[in-house]
Length: 309
Image (tube, rainbow, N blue to C red):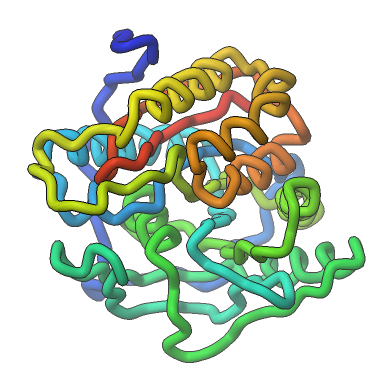
């Protein structure tokens, strides 16, 4: 580990990973075997949903985030997670709480903002049993929910990036849920809690992944991407302050500052992806490892691994 600009980073490199990325990898059944007793949350991560570290890894600041993603992937493998539960701020819903239930999602996605840098192939299996249990659990809260099972359904960039980095070999199925824009912080947290409760009932060991950014100010002009930086010093300071609190496990201070942080740093979707994670973690955690914090064309992105046990 080393400390740079007030943020302690884990600099351990992960071993090289094999990547399916749509290349005919042999896949196992859609739903994993019923987990042994003791299922539930075994890992939790906060990841940026930008495709830039994936499609332009050779660019130094974005490449450092890609390296951080690899370290998170190694930690996920070590956790023994059987299924990944993904909440991405980029899959937007406005009516029901949506859960992906199609057994396999495969295709090539073109990001609406960064299409000039390349395509995003994906090949994702869904844990349909756990997704169904999550739908039932969501409905039990009085929140209208339904499954999504459509051929060629548009999978969002953030989900694809999480899957390709953390599950590049495709060994683990996913549960994917939407970001309902009308759900507040509390409701979003309850959805994270529902997912872990459902996993516990099925005996499934899960890693929960909140996909979204930190500060949200993009540069609106061309830049030399090698010199990318956070758009403003104030937003950079906010990001570092919040990351330091996450490292300490100071949930009380994080919750107190979140509304101000979201407003002043223009945080991606008001930091709702952290609300989902916090609900999944039962409202608390012991600390966190910041594997990487870098600019993404002016916005802030971090790879964070939470210490849940």
